[in-house]
Length: 143
Image (tube, rainbow, N blue to C red; front, side):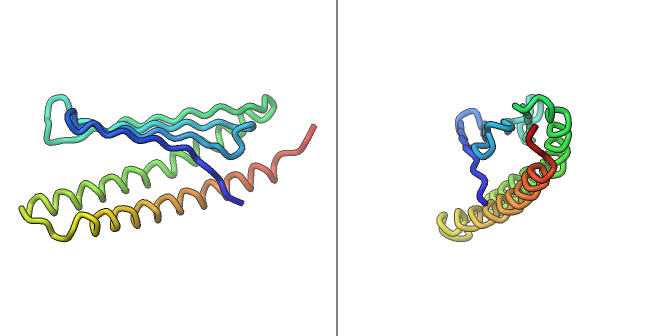
């Protein structure tokens, strides 16, 4: 079974800001998960980057709301580091390229590396969410 997510990202190069928003499409009638991540320069030290991450969970089944919200929040806390690790990997690649003052490979090669890394992270997250949803479905019963 596949889980679908809608994702929208915005890059503001002038202000050096990156925003990523996602929400689940699968099982939206039971639970809605909205996640927002913002990367922006540190206000006092422009050489540093800040990350603001927010997840909102809304369970649309009243008798399961507390139980499912706790499970989802625990799951997001476990997986939040994967997103940060992915972005740190991207920034490290950019720093390496920038510090050498030469293009190591064609841009398309770097994009391929980024795509592969994010696909791996997304697949890990998907498997984790699949497992969560299967457990949730197994633990729910009709009234």
